[in-house]
Image (tube, rainbow, N blue to C red; front, side, top):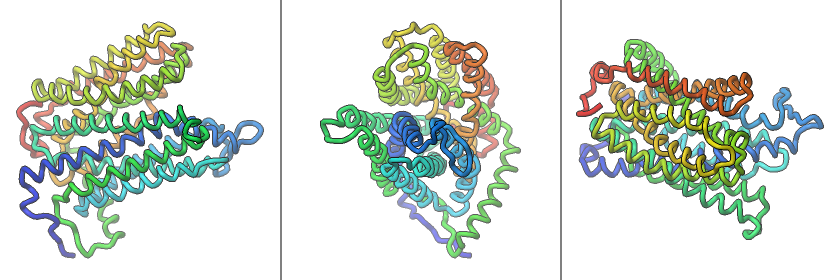
Length: 453
């Protein structure tokens, strides 16, 4: 089995690295439309209506012989996709590192997800299974592509540059996702003027996220380059088998890196709090604060555009004060936001917008800086494997925050108490992150120490 070089020395020059960074940023811009337009706004309500059209007299549908309420189809699809990501992401990372073809795998998963998203246009009538299936494929593909995408960060940015580079990527993602959402909401709200039914406007909006994803993925695909040697003469089956072997080796290696493991656990905890606040804010606004759908949509857009500036601001602060300190400070802000939500006055859209602005200010920053901090704690040439585990730390406990929220709601019958209960994720996450000896972890990974951590 031979080895074929995939690059030339010229590709390591400063100018080429800058070109790669600019291209790399645009994958955040490309895929964020899926989270905003598809997941956050349109698909959940629309897929529920499609399932209701196919439901029996008691409001149930029967996929694969199961009896499910029509309104449970979208949450069920999210759950299936998350479980699948937990199984798939580490293997994808191992394959990327084993084959050396990170760029090709990024493109394959990006376009698989983009075309599945475009296919949502055809979900109409009672085709709820088509919609659920396409969403599951797209969400798995998104997670897999993001694991590979994240692994490029150590390749294109020196240790002292990663906070800024990661922050620009996250910030551009929020800007791109927000821009398409504005266009789609305009189409939805003015669908009569465009001669469209409301259903058709939703389907066009869903498909537009896939077209946006596919079109802008061209930029990173043209700019990024594989750094490691690609294996020639290896069959697909052989690559997968070797990927499983490499994955097993990574699991053993991870057990010998307690600092990296502790960081993953800390991230798992506090990120679940972040994701649950985002997921439950709309319900909190409508059920507890009695705000209308217009106010909720306006708040979603506010978060998107504030998060763009917030990611850049926190990236600059990390350069000055250190990444870990700024992430810890962000967790303090998240704690204050959750506690302040308890005191919001019913019917006060202005107070809810202030909370949304606060969320936006720390949302992009904590995600971007967590990514760059983790990049220092992983060994070279195994970035994709480790970012596969990072991805499942992002997704693998998505049930825990909603469970705590639901349990608090069940026990207290109060959305205020339920939202306040999420403070535990930020407090525990703060304590775990505080215990992470980042400098020791960087040395154990064999990486150079940046000036500030």
